[in-house]
Length: 597
Image (cartoon, rainbow, N blue to C red; front, side, top):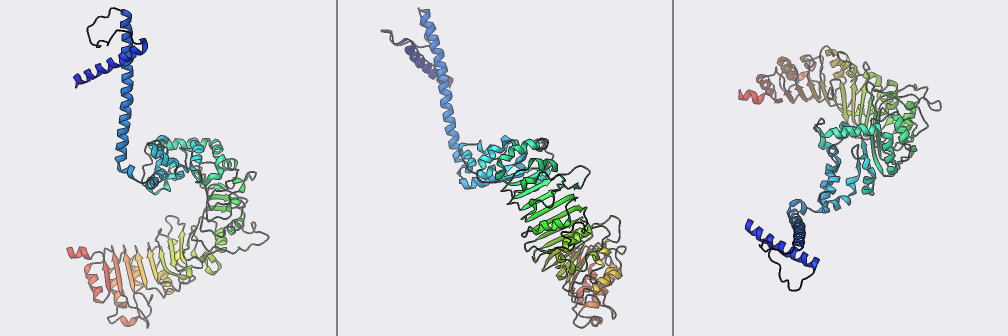
Protein backbone atom coordinates (compact mmCIF):
# COMPACT_ATOMS: atom_id res chain seq x y z
CA UNK A 1 0.00 0.00 0.00
CA UNK A 2 2.85 2.43 0.82
CA UNK A 3 4.60 1.71 -2.48
CA UNK A 4 1.41 2.37 -4.46
CA UNK A 5 0.72 5.60 -2.58
CA UNK A 6 4.34 6.74 -3.05
CA UNK A 7 4.25 6.09 -6.80
CA UNK A 8 0.88 7.79 -7.33
CA UNK A 9 1.88 10.76 -5.19
CA UNK A 10 5.19 11.21 -7.08
CA UNK A 11 3.46 11.13 -10.45
CA UNK A 12 0.75 13.52 -9.27
CA UNK A 13 3.23 16.04 -7.88
CA UNK A 14 5.42 15.73 -10.98
CA UNK A 15 2.53 16.59 -13.31
CA UNK A 16 1.23 19.40 -11.15
CA UNK A 17 4.68 20.96 -10.66
CA UNK A 18 5.43 20.80 -14.39
CA UNK A 19 2.16 22.53 -15.15
CA UNK A 20 2.80 25.18 -12.54
CA UNK A 21 6.32 25.78 -13.81
CA UNK A 22 5.10 26.10 -17.38
CA UNK A 23 2.32 28.46 -16.34
CA UNK A 24 4.78 30.68 -14.54
CA UNK A 25 7.79 30.65 -16.88
CA UNK A 26 6.21 29.69 -20.17
CA UNK A 27 7.45 26.91 -22.36
CA UNK A 28 11.24 26.99 -23.09
CA UNK A 29 12.31 26.14 -26.61
CA UNK A 30 14.16 22.84 -26.82
CA UNK A 31 14.06 22.16 -23.14
CA UNK A 32 12.05 18.95 -23.57
CA UNK A 33 10.35 17.10 -20.78
CA UNK A 34 11.30 17.81 -17.18
CA UNK A 35 13.25 15.16 -15.36
CA UNK A 36 11.46 13.19 -12.62
CA UNK A 37 11.33 14.85 -9.23
CA UNK A 38 13.24 12.07 -7.58
CA UNK A 39 16.03 11.95 -10.18
CA UNK A 40 19.64 12.66 -9.25
CA UNK A 41 20.15 15.24 -11.98
CA UNK A 42 22.13 18.24 -10.91
CA UNK A 43 20.65 21.57 -11.78
CA UNK A 44 23.39 23.94 -12.87
CA UNK A 45 21.21 26.99 -12.35
CA UNK A 46 20.35 27.74 -8.65
CA UNK A 47 17.54 30.09 -9.73
CA UNK A 48 15.97 27.27 -11.73
CA UNK A 49 16.15 25.04 -8.64
CA UNK A 50 14.44 27.71 -6.55
CA UNK A 51 11.58 27.99 -9.05
CA UNK A 52 11.25 24.24 -9.12
CA UNK A 53 10.99 24.15 -5.32
CA UNK A 54 8.30 26.79 -5.34
CA UNK A 55 6.41 24.86 -8.01
CA UNK A 56 6.66 21.67 -5.97
CA UNK A 57 5.34 23.42 -2.84
CA UNK A 58 2.43 24.87 -4.75
CA UNK A 59 1.74 21.46 -6.26
CA UNK A 60 1.58 19.94 -2.79
CA UNK A 61 -0.89 22.58 -1.56
CA UNK A 62 -3.07 22.17 -4.61
CA UNK A 63 -3.04 18.41 -4.29
CA UNK A 64 -3.98 18.50 -0.60
CA UNK A 65 -6.78 20.98 -1.28
CA UNK A 66 -8.09 18.95 -4.19
CA UNK A 67 -7.94 15.71 -2.21
CA UNK A 68 -9.76 17.27 0.78
CA UNK A 69 -12.40 18.81 -1.43
CA UNK A 70 -13.00 15.69 -3.43
CA UNK A 71 -12.95 13.52 -0.34
CA UNK A 72 -15.48 15.78 1.37
CA UNK A 73 -17.74 15.55 -1.67
CA UNK A 74 -17.48 11.78 -1.76
CA UNK A 75 -18.12 11.52 2.01
CA UNK A 76 -21.11 13.86 1.77
CA UNK A 77 -22.51 11.85 -1.12
CA UNK A 78 -22.03 8.62 0.82
CA UNK A 79 -23.76 10.10 3.87
CA UNK A 80 -26.66 11.24 1.74
CA UNK A 81 -27.05 7.76 0.31
CA UNK A 82 -26.79 6.30 3.82
CA UNK A 83 -29.34 8.71 5.29
CA UNK A 84 -31.72 8.06 2.43
CA UNK A 85 -31.56 4.36 3.21
CA UNK A 86 -32.58 4.87 6.88
CA UNK A 87 -36.22 4.07 7.75
CA UNK A 88 -36.87 7.51 9.30
CA UNK A 89 -36.01 9.22 6.03
CA UNK A 90 -38.51 7.06 4.21
CA UNK A 91 -41.33 8.33 6.40
CA UNK A 92 -43.80 10.74 4.80
CA UNK A 93 -43.48 14.37 5.82
CA UNK A 94 -46.91 14.30 7.48
CA UNK A 95 -45.74 11.63 9.92
CA UNK A 96 -42.51 13.48 10.63
CA UNK A 97 -44.54 16.60 11.41
CA UNK A 98 -46.53 14.64 14.00
CA UNK A 99 -43.32 13.37 15.62
CA UNK A 100 -41.72 16.82 15.65
CA UNK A 101 -44.81 18.47 17.11
CA UNK A 102 -45.03 15.85 19.87
CA UNK A 103 -41.37 16.35 20.81
CA UNK A 104 -41.71 20.13 20.80
CA UNK A 105 -44.94 20.19 22.81
CA UNK A 106 -43.70 17.84 25.54
CA UNK A 107 -42.82 20.00 28.55
CA UNK A 108 -39.70 17.91 29.24
CA UNK A 109 -38.30 19.38 26.03
CA UNK A 110 -38.05 22.76 27.81
CA UNK A 111 -35.44 21.42 30.22
CA UNK A 112 -32.79 21.13 27.52
CA UNK A 113 -30.51 23.96 26.32
CA UNK A 114 -31.90 25.88 23.38
CA UNK A 115 -29.56 24.24 20.85
CA UNK A 116 -30.56 20.76 21.99
CA UNK A 117 -34.34 21.20 22.14
CA UNK A 118 -37.02 21.08 19.51
CA UNK A 119 -37.64 22.80 17.19
CA UNK A 120 -34.21 24.44 17.03
CA UNK A 121 -32.30 21.15 16.92
CA UNK A 122 -34.68 19.81 14.27
CA UNK A 123 -34.06 22.78 12.00
CA UNK A 124 -30.29 22.15 12.20
CA UNK A 125 -30.31 18.42 11.51
CA UNK A 126 -30.65 18.36 7.74
CA UNK A 127 -31.88 20.44 4.87
CA UNK A 128 -35.06 18.42 4.50
CA UNK A 129 -35.83 18.53 8.22
CA UNK A 130 -35.17 22.25 8.30
CA UNK A 131 -37.63 22.71 5.48
CA UNK A 132 -40.24 20.69 7.34
CA UNK A 133 -39.63 22.62 10.58
CA UNK A 134 -39.89 26.03 8.92
CA UNK A 135 -43.12 25.01 7.21
CA UNK A 136 -44.71 23.71 10.44
CA UNK A 137 -45.89 26.79 12.39
CA UNK A 138 -47.08 24.71 15.36
CA UNK A 139 -43.46 23.88 16.22
CA UNK A 140 -42.81 27.54 16.98
CA UNK A 141 -45.94 28.35 18.98
CA UNK A 142 -44.71 27.52 22.51
CA UNK A 143 -42.86 30.10 24.62
CA UNK A 144 -41.37 29.45 28.07
CA UNK A 145 -38.70 31.02 30.29
CA UNK A 146 -35.94 29.30 28.31
CA UNK A 147 -36.80 30.69 24.87
CA UNK A 148 -38.58 33.93 25.76
CA UNK A 149 -35.63 35.91 24.36
CA UNK A 150 -36.38 34.38 20.93
CA UNK A 151 -40.02 35.52 20.86
CA UNK A 152 -39.59 37.63 17.67
CA UNK A 153 -38.22 34.63 15.75
CA UNK A 154 -40.85 32.25 17.15
CA UNK A 155 -43.68 34.70 16.44
CA UNK A 156 -42.45 35.07 12.84
CA UNK A 157 -42.12 31.34 12.22
CA UNK A 158 -45.43 30.46 13.92
CA UNK A 159 -47.18 32.49 11.22
CA UNK A 160 -50.95 32.25 11.76
CA UNK A 161 -50.73 29.85 14.71
CA UNK A 162 -51.32 31.67 17.99
CA UNK A 163 -48.68 31.56 20.76
CA UNK A 164 -48.96 29.59 23.99
CA UNK A 165 -46.85 31.39 26.60
CA UNK A 166 -46.07 29.63 29.90
CA UNK A 167 -43.85 31.59 32.26
CA UNK A 168 -44.09 29.33 35.30
CA UNK A 169 -41.85 27.42 37.65
CA UNK A 170 -40.77 23.96 36.50
CA UNK A 171 -43.12 21.94 38.74
CA UNK A 172 -46.16 23.93 37.63
CA UNK A 173 -45.10 23.86 34.00
CA UNK A 174 -44.64 20.08 33.82
CA UNK A 175 -47.71 19.22 35.93
CA UNK A 176 -49.92 19.77 32.87
CA UNK A 177 -47.88 17.37 30.71
CA UNK A 178 -48.82 13.64 30.98
CA UNK A 179 -45.48 12.49 29.58
CA UNK A 180 -43.62 14.33 32.37
CA UNK A 181 -45.23 12.28 35.15
CA UNK A 182 -42.52 10.90 37.40
CA UNK A 183 -39.84 13.12 35.88
CA UNK A 184 -36.90 13.74 38.22
CA UNK A 185 -37.24 17.44 38.96
CA UNK A 186 -33.85 17.50 40.68
CA UNK A 187 -31.89 16.44 37.63
CA UNK A 188 -29.23 18.88 36.35
CA UNK A 189 -31.27 19.58 33.23
CA UNK A 190 -33.79 21.58 35.25
CA UNK A 191 -31.07 23.86 36.65
CA UNK A 192 -31.02 25.97 33.50
CA UNK A 193 -34.82 26.20 33.53
CA UNK A 194 -34.82 27.40 37.15
CA UNK A 195 -32.22 30.05 36.34
CA UNK A 196 -34.23 31.20 33.32
CA UNK A 197 -37.38 31.36 35.47
CA UNK A 198 -35.65 33.47 38.14
CA UNK A 199 -34.19 35.71 35.45
CA UNK A 200 -37.59 36.29 33.86
CA UNK A 201 -39.15 37.11 37.26
CA UNK A 202 -36.49 39.68 38.08
CA UNK A 203 -36.82 41.31 34.64
CA UNK A 204 -40.50 40.79 34.00
CA UNK A 205 -41.15 44.35 32.83
CA UNK A 206 -38.36 44.05 30.24
CA UNK A 207 -39.60 40.70 28.97
CA UNK A 208 -43.17 42.00 28.83
CA UNK A 209 -41.85 44.68 26.48
CA UNK A 210 -40.51 41.93 24.17
CA UNK A 211 -43.88 40.20 24.23
CA UNK A 212 -45.99 43.30 23.69
CA UNK A 213 -45.51 43.66 19.90
CA UNK A 214 -46.94 40.15 19.49
CA UNK A 215 -49.94 40.53 21.85
CA UNK A 216 -52.37 39.94 19.00
CA UNK A 217 -50.81 36.47 18.53
CA UNK A 218 -51.33 35.30 22.14
CA UNK A 219 -53.61 32.34 22.71
CA UNK A 220 -52.70 31.32 26.26
CA UNK A 221 -50.71 33.18 28.88
CA UNK A 222 -49.64 31.50 32.12
CA UNK A 223 -47.64 33.66 34.55
CA UNK A 224 -46.34 32.65 37.96
CA UNK A 225 -44.26 34.47 40.55
CA UNK A 226 -45.02 38.03 39.41
CA UNK A 227 -46.75 40.42 41.81
CA UNK A 228 -50.21 41.74 40.89
CA UNK A 229 -48.83 45.30 40.82
CA UNK A 230 -46.29 44.35 38.14
CA UNK A 231 -48.93 42.47 36.17
CA UNK A 232 -51.23 45.45 36.07
CA UNK A 233 -48.34 47.74 35.14
CA UNK A 234 -46.93 45.54 32.37
CA UNK A 235 -50.06 44.02 30.83
CA UNK A 236 -52.02 47.18 30.12
CA UNK A 237 -52.48 46.58 26.39
CA UNK A 238 -55.18 44.66 24.46
CA UNK A 239 -54.83 40.94 23.75
CA UNK A 240 -57.68 40.38 21.28
CA UNK A 241 -57.06 36.66 20.71
CA UNK A 242 -56.17 35.62 24.25
CA UNK A 243 -58.29 32.59 25.21
CA UNK A 244 -56.73 31.50 28.53
CA UNK A 245 -55.08 33.57 31.23
CA UNK A 246 -53.57 32.09 34.41
CA UNK A 247 -51.77 34.21 37.00
CA UNK A 248 -50.39 32.91 40.30
CA UNK A 249 -48.71 34.88 43.08
CA UNK A 250 -47.77 33.19 46.34
CA UNK A 251 -45.69 34.73 49.05
CA UNK A 252 -44.05 32.49 51.62
CA UNK A 253 -46.12 32.13 54.76
CA UNK A 254 -49.27 33.62 53.22
CA UNK A 255 -52.21 31.70 51.79
CA UNK A 256 -54.34 34.71 50.90
CA UNK A 257 -53.67 38.04 49.16
CA UNK A 258 -55.67 41.25 49.09
CA UNK A 259 -57.62 42.57 46.16
CA UNK A 260 -55.72 45.05 43.98
CA UNK A 261 -56.62 48.56 45.11
CA UNK A 262 -55.01 50.62 42.35
CA UNK A 263 -57.64 50.98 39.64
CA UNK A 264 -55.58 53.30 37.42
CA UNK A 265 -54.46 50.33 35.28
CA UNK A 266 -56.72 47.66 33.83
CA UNK A 267 -55.39 44.28 32.76
CA UNK A 268 -55.24 44.10 28.96
CA UNK A 269 -57.09 47.43 28.90
CA UNK A 270 -60.20 45.32 29.36
CA UNK A 271 -59.92 44.22 25.72
CA UNK A 272 -59.94 40.39 25.78
CA UNK A 273 -63.04 39.49 23.76
CA UNK A 274 -62.02 35.84 23.29
CA UNK A 275 -61.03 35.10 26.89
CA UNK A 276 -62.72 31.87 28.02
CA UNK A 277 -60.51 30.45 30.76
CA UNK A 278 -59.42 32.56 33.75
CA UNK A 279 -57.48 31.33 36.78
CA UNK A 280 -56.28 33.73 39.48
CA UNK A 281 -54.26 32.46 42.45
CA UNK A 282 -53.41 35.23 44.90
CA UNK A 283 -54.12 37.83 42.21
CA UNK A 284 -57.09 39.91 43.31
CA UNK A 285 -58.53 41.31 40.10
CA UNK A 286 -61.61 43.44 41.06
CA UNK A 287 -64.85 41.65 40.27
CA UNK A 288 -66.08 44.51 38.08
CA UNK A 289 -63.23 43.88 35.62
CA UNK A 290 -64.14 43.08 31.99
CA UNK A 291 -62.02 39.93 32.35
CA UNK A 292 -64.97 38.20 34.05
CA UNK A 293 -67.17 38.32 30.94
CA UNK A 294 -67.99 35.46 28.58
CA UNK A 295 -65.95 32.87 30.49
CA UNK A 296 -66.44 29.12 30.32
CA UNK A 297 -64.00 28.40 33.17
CA UNK A 298 -63.35 30.55 36.24
CA UNK A 299 -61.00 29.69 39.10
CA UNK A 300 -60.14 32.05 41.95
CA UNK A 301 -57.98 31.01 44.91
CA UNK A 302 -56.47 32.76 47.92
CA UNK A 303 -57.95 36.25 47.51
CA UNK A 304 -59.55 38.61 50.01
CA UNK A 305 -61.88 41.01 48.23
CA UNK A 306 -61.91 44.34 50.02
CA UNK A 307 -64.04 46.49 47.71
CA UNK A 308 -65.73 43.83 45.61
CA UNK A 309 -68.72 41.99 47.05
CA UNK A 310 -70.33 38.60 46.55
CA UNK A 311 -73.09 40.43 44.67
CA UNK A 312 -70.52 41.61 42.14
CA UNK A 313 -69.29 38.04 41.85
CA UNK A 314 -72.82 36.96 40.97
CA UNK A 315 -73.06 39.78 38.45
CA UNK A 316 -69.80 38.61 36.90
CA UNK A 317 -71.09 35.03 36.72
CA UNK A 318 -74.31 36.24 35.14
CA UNK A 319 -72.15 37.60 32.32
CA UNK A 320 -70.90 34.06 31.63
CA UNK A 321 -73.99 32.18 30.41
CA UNK A 322 -71.86 29.38 28.91
CA UNK A 323 -69.95 28.76 32.14
CA UNK A 324 -68.81 25.14 32.51
CA UNK A 325 -66.34 25.14 35.42
CA UNK A 326 -66.40 27.25 38.59
CA UNK A 327 -63.73 26.83 41.27
CA UNK A 328 -63.66 29.16 44.29
CA UNK A 329 -61.26 28.33 47.11
CA UNK A 330 -60.16 30.27 50.16
CA UNK A 331 -61.69 33.58 49.15
CA UNK A 332 -63.20 36.12 51.52
CA UNK A 333 -65.37 39.19 51.25
CA UNK A 334 -64.99 42.06 53.69
CA UNK A 335 -68.31 43.55 52.63
CA UNK A 336 -71.29 41.80 54.17
CA UNK A 337 -74.19 40.60 52.04
CA UNK A 338 -76.28 43.58 53.11
CA UNK A 339 -73.52 46.15 52.52
CA UNK A 340 -72.80 44.70 49.11
CA UNK A 341 -76.40 44.66 47.98
CA UNK A 342 -77.10 46.19 44.61
CA UNK A 343 -79.85 48.81 44.44
CA UNK A 344 -80.99 47.82 47.91
CA UNK A 345 -81.73 44.23 46.87
CA UNK A 346 -80.36 41.71 49.37
CA UNK A 347 -81.86 38.58 47.82
CA UNK A 348 -79.67 36.39 45.65
CA UNK A 349 -80.19 36.74 41.88
CA UNK A 350 -81.27 33.62 40.01
CA UNK A 351 -78.71 32.38 37.47
CA UNK A 352 -79.10 29.31 35.28
CA UNK A 353 -76.10 27.70 33.59
CA UNK A 354 -77.21 24.96 31.18
CA UNK A 355 -73.63 23.87 30.42
CA UNK A 356 -72.34 23.85 34.00
CA UNK A 357 -70.47 20.62 34.75
CA UNK A 358 -68.17 21.39 37.69
CA UNK A 359 -68.60 23.60 40.79
CA UNK A 360 -66.06 23.61 43.63
CA UNK A 361 -66.67 25.84 46.64
CA UNK A 362 -63.95 25.42 49.30
CA UNK A 363 -63.22 27.45 52.41
CA UNK A 364 -65.75 30.18 51.74
CA UNK A 365 -67.58 32.23 54.33
CA UNK A 366 -70.85 30.53 55.15
CA UNK A 367 -72.95 33.52 54.07
CA UNK A 368 -71.11 33.75 50.75
CA UNK A 369 -71.50 30.02 50.10
CA UNK A 370 -75.23 30.14 50.83
CA UNK A 371 -75.62 33.19 48.60
CA UNK A 372 -73.94 31.43 45.69
CA UNK A 373 -75.83 28.18 46.19
CA UNK A 374 -79.11 30.06 46.25
CA UNK A 375 -78.20 31.85 42.99
CA UNK A 376 -76.68 29.11 40.82
CA UNK A 377 -78.78 26.47 39.14
CA UNK A 378 -78.19 23.98 36.34
CA UNK A 379 -80.21 21.29 34.60
CA UNK A 380 -77.10 19.46 33.42
CA UNK A 381 -77.15 15.74 34.25
CA UNK A 382 -73.33 15.70 34.25
CA UNK A 383 -72.98 18.35 36.95
CA UNK A 384 -70.47 17.66 39.73
CA UNK A 385 -70.76 20.00 42.70
CA UNK A 386 -68.24 19.86 45.53
CA UNK A 387 -68.51 21.79 48.80
CA UNK A 388 -66.19 21.92 51.77
CA UNK A 389 -68.01 22.90 54.93
CA UNK A 390 -66.13 24.78 57.63
CA UNK A 391 -65.13 22.93 60.80
CA UNK A 392 -68.07 22.49 63.16
CA UNK A 393 -70.66 23.16 60.44
CA UNK A 394 -73.58 20.75 60.26
CA UNK A 395 -75.24 19.52 57.10
CA UNK A 396 -78.41 21.05 58.50
CA UNK A 397 -77.08 24.50 57.64
CA UNK A 398 -77.77 23.68 53.97
CA UNK A 399 -81.37 22.76 54.63
CA UNK A 400 -83.99 23.00 53.38
CA UNK A 401 -82.51 22.07 50.02
CA UNK A 402 -85.41 23.74 48.22
CA UNK A 403 -83.91 27.11 49.18
CA UNK A 404 -80.65 26.30 47.38
CA UNK A 405 -81.19 25.71 43.64
CA UNK A 406 -77.63 24.50 43.18
CA UNK A 407 -78.33 21.52 45.46
CA UNK A 408 -81.80 20.57 44.26
CA UNK A 409 -80.43 17.45 42.61
CA UNK A 410 -79.43 15.91 45.95
CA UNK A 411 -82.95 14.62 46.85
CA UNK A 412 -82.95 12.78 43.51
CA UNK A 413 -79.77 10.84 44.40
CA UNK A 414 -79.86 7.06 44.04
CA UNK A 415 -76.54 6.38 45.81
CA UNK A 416 -74.79 7.89 48.81
CA UNK A 417 -71.17 7.20 49.72
CA UNK A 418 -69.75 8.35 53.06
CA UNK A 419 -65.95 8.53 53.35
CA UNK A 420 -65.01 7.79 49.74
CA UNK A 421 -62.72 10.75 49.01
CA UNK A 422 -61.75 11.36 52.64
CA UNK A 423 -62.87 9.98 56.02
CA UNK A 424 -65.47 12.76 56.32
CA UNK A 425 -67.29 13.44 53.09
CA UNK A 426 -70.60 12.60 51.43
CA UNK A 427 -70.93 11.73 47.76
CA UNK A 428 -74.45 11.85 46.31
CA UNK A 429 -74.97 10.42 42.82
CA UNK A 430 -78.07 10.32 40.69
CA UNK A 431 -79.73 11.35 37.47
CA UNK A 432 -79.18 15.03 38.34
CA UNK A 433 -75.39 14.71 38.67
CA UNK A 434 -73.02 14.15 41.58
CA UNK A 435 -72.58 16.19 44.75
CA UNK A 436 -69.62 15.98 47.11
CA UNK A 437 -70.05 17.52 50.57
CA UNK A 438 -66.77 17.45 52.48
CA UNK A 439 -66.07 18.58 56.01
CA UNK A 440 -63.09 20.70 57.02
CA UNK A 441 -62.43 18.36 59.92
CA UNK A 442 -60.24 19.30 62.85
CA UNK A 443 -57.90 16.37 63.70
CA UNK A 444 -58.92 14.68 66.90
CA UNK A 445 -62.53 15.85 66.74
CA UNK A 446 -65.15 13.07 67.06
CA UNK A 447 -68.32 14.80 65.92
CA UNK A 448 -67.64 15.12 62.18
CA UNK A 449 -69.64 12.01 61.04
CA UNK A 450 -72.61 13.09 63.14
CA UNK A 451 -72.48 16.60 61.67
CA UNK A 452 -72.75 15.18 58.14
CA UNK A 453 -75.01 12.16 58.62
CA UNK A 454 -77.50 13.13 61.33
CA UNK A 455 -79.78 15.05 58.95
CA UNK A 456 -80.03 12.27 56.34
CA UNK A 457 -83.36 10.48 56.36
CA UNK A 458 -84.78 13.06 58.71
CA UNK A 459 -84.38 16.66 57.59
CA UNK A 460 -82.88 15.59 54.26
CA UNK A 461 -85.22 13.10 52.61
CA UNK A 462 -83.82 10.84 49.90
CA UNK A 463 -86.79 8.85 48.59
CA UNK A 464 -84.88 7.43 45.57
CA UNK A 465 -81.78 6.29 47.46
CA UNK A 466 -81.12 2.61 46.76
CA UNK A 467 -77.40 2.33 47.61
CA UNK A 468 -75.64 3.48 50.79
CA UNK A 469 -71.95 3.08 51.67
CA UNK A 470 -70.63 3.91 55.15
CA UNK A 471 -66.91 4.01 55.96
CA UNK A 472 -64.74 4.93 58.92
CA UNK A 473 -67.58 4.77 61.46
CA UNK A 474 -66.73 4.11 65.09
CA UNK A 475 -68.91 3.96 68.22
CA UNK A 476 -67.18 7.04 69.61
CA UNK A 477 -68.05 9.13 66.57
CA UNK A 478 -71.53 7.83 65.73
CA UNK A 479 -73.62 5.59 67.94
CA UNK A 480 -76.17 2.93 67.04
CA UNK A 481 -79.16 5.21 67.64
CA UNK A 482 -77.84 7.60 64.97
CA UNK A 483 -77.63 4.78 62.43
CA UNK A 484 -81.11 3.51 63.24
CA UNK A 485 -82.53 7.02 62.90
CA UNK A 486 -80.90 7.49 59.49
CA UNK A 487 -81.85 4.06 58.07
CA UNK A 488 -85.44 4.51 59.24
CA UNK A 489 -85.75 7.38 56.80
CA UNK A 490 -84.26 5.41 53.87
CA UNK A 491 -86.81 2.69 53.14
CA UNK A 492 -85.84 2.25 49.46
CA UNK A 493 -82.32 0.93 50.14
CA UNK A 494 -81.48 -2.28 48.30
CA UNK A 495 -77.67 -2.21 48.70
CA UNK A 496 -75.80 -1.41 51.91
CA UNK A 497 -72.00 -1.36 52.26
CA UNK A 498 -69.87 -1.08 55.40
CA UNK A 499 -66.17 -0.26 55.28
CA UNK A 500 -63.91 -0.15 58.34
CA UNK A 501 -66.91 -0.35 60.65
CA UNK A 502 -67.66 -2.33 63.80
CA UNK A 503 -70.21 -5.06 64.53
CA UNK A 504 -72.63 -2.80 66.41
CA UNK A 505 -73.75 -1.17 63.15
CA UNK A 506 -74.48 -4.59 61.64
CA UNK A 507 -76.74 -5.67 64.50
CA UNK A 508 -79.10 -2.77 63.72
CA UNK A 509 -80.09 -4.59 60.51
CA UNK A 510 -81.36 -7.73 62.25
CA UNK A 511 -85.10 -7.96 61.61
CA UNK A 512 -87.25 -8.32 64.73
CA UNK A 513 -91.01 -8.20 65.38
CA UNK A 514 -90.57 -4.57 66.46
CA UNK A 515 -88.02 -3.32 63.91
CA UNK A 516 -87.07 -4.00 60.32
CA UNK A 517 -84.76 -1.42 58.82
CA UNK A 518 -84.20 -1.42 55.06
CA UNK A 519 -87.01 -3.89 54.21
CA UNK A 520 -85.92 -3.99 50.54
CA UNK A 521 -82.27 -4.86 51.28
CA UNK A 522 -80.91 -7.40 48.78
CA UNK A 523 -77.12 -6.90 48.85
CA UNK A 524 -74.83 -6.45 51.85
CA UNK A 525 -71.13 -5.57 51.40
CA UNK A 526 -68.58 -5.79 54.22
CA UNK A 527 -64.98 -4.64 53.75
CA UNK A 528 -62.16 -4.35 56.27
CA UNK A 529 -64.68 -4.43 59.10
CA UNK A 530 -64.65 -6.07 62.51
CA UNK A 531 -67.65 -8.32 61.94
CA UNK A 532 -68.76 -10.88 64.52
CA UNK A 533 -69.77 -14.13 62.78
CA UNK A 534 -72.73 -14.65 65.12
CA UNK A 535 -74.16 -11.23 64.33
CA UNK A 536 -73.73 -11.86 60.60
CA UNK A 537 -75.52 -15.23 60.75
CA UNK A 538 -78.30 -13.77 62.91
CA UNK A 539 -78.82 -10.99 60.37
CA UNK A 540 -78.95 -13.50 57.52
CA UNK A 541 -81.44 -15.73 59.36
CA UNK A 542 -83.75 -12.79 59.94
CA UNK A 543 -83.75 -11.90 56.22
CA UNK A 544 -83.28 -15.26 54.50
CA UNK A 545 -85.95 -16.71 52.21
CA UNK A 546 -85.95 -19.85 54.35
CA UNK A 547 -86.05 -20.38 58.07
CA UNK A 548 -88.51 -19.69 60.80
CA UNK A 549 -87.63 -15.98 60.92
CA UNK A 550 -88.49 -15.18 57.34
CA UNK A 551 -91.94 -14.07 58.44
CA UNK A 552 -90.38 -11.24 60.45
CA UNK A 553 -90.00 -9.23 57.25
CA UNK A 554 -93.01 -7.04 56.42
CA UNK A 555 -95.30 -7.68 53.50
CA UNK A 556 -93.72 -6.72 50.16
CA UNK A 557 -90.23 -7.27 51.58
CA UNK A 558 -87.13 -8.40 49.68
CA UNK A 559 -85.02 -11.23 50.97
CA UNK A 560 -81.27 -10.86 51.39
CA UNK A 561 -79.84 -12.35 48.20
CA UNK A 562 -76.14 -11.53 48.21
CA UNK A 563 -73.35 -10.92 50.75
CA UNK A 564 -69.88 -9.72 49.73
CA UNK A 565 -67.07 -10.05 52.26
CA UNK A 566 -63.59 -8.60 51.74
CA UNK A 567 -60.70 -8.66 54.20
CA UNK A 568 -62.79 -9.31 57.28
CA UNK A 569 -60.53 -11.37 59.55
CA UNK A 570 -63.27 -12.75 61.83
CA UNK A 571 -65.19 -14.39 58.96
CA UNK A 572 -64.19 -17.99 58.17
CA UNK A 573 -65.25 -20.70 55.74
CA UNK A 574 -67.81 -22.15 58.15
CA UNK A 575 -69.63 -18.82 58.35
CA UNK A 576 -69.70 -18.60 54.55
CA UNK A 577 -71.08 -22.14 54.23
CA UNK A 578 -73.85 -21.37 56.72
CA UNK A 579 -74.86 -18.33 54.70
CA UNK A 580 -74.93 -20.37 51.50
CA UNK A 581 -77.23 -22.92 53.14
CA UNK A 582 -79.75 -20.08 53.41
CA UNK A 583 -79.71 -19.66 49.59
CA UNK A 584 -77.63 -16.51 49.89
CA UNK A 585 -74.99 -15.91 47.22
CA UNK A 586 -71.68 -15.21 48.98
CA UNK A 587 -68.56 -13.61 47.52
CA UNK A 588 -65.65 -14.03 49.94
CA UNK A 589 -62.03 -13.20 49.19
CA UNK A 590 -60.81 -15.88 51.64
CA UNK A 591 -62.43 -18.82 49.85
CA UNK A 592 -59.44 -19.68 47.64
CA UNK A 593 -57.05 -19.44 50.58
CA UNK A 594 -59.22 -21.72 52.72
CA UNK A 595 -59.53 -24.30 49.93
CA UNK A 596 -55.77 -24.39 49.51
CA UNK A 597 -55.29 -24.92 53.23
